[in-house]
Amino acid sequence: MDLSDVLDAAGFEALQSASAERALSLLTGREDIVALITDVELSGKTDGFELARAAAQMRPGLPIVVVSGRSKPDPDRMPPQARFVARPCRGDDILDELRTLMTG
Image (cartoon, rainbow, N blue to C red; front, side, top):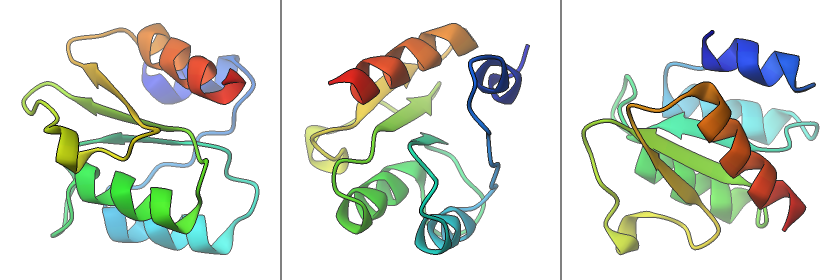
């Protein structure tokens, strides 16, 4: 099962974006977005760490999960409220981190 299927089954509507620029556009234009899950590697010039920081500035308190199988987070690259999940992982592992962030 891919991550969007896991999220849909958990009651979330997953919006997908291949680039950080598109994701930021979605965050700007839609108030109903309740969380961000991003891979570190994205198409375009901005990576997932930069996306996470920009999203945290735009929407303080937004739950953010950053996922990667190649990069490890340097503490300066992650917003304080974000969680990192290393790949390989299951979609449920990412969902568990998201739920933890959403429930405080």
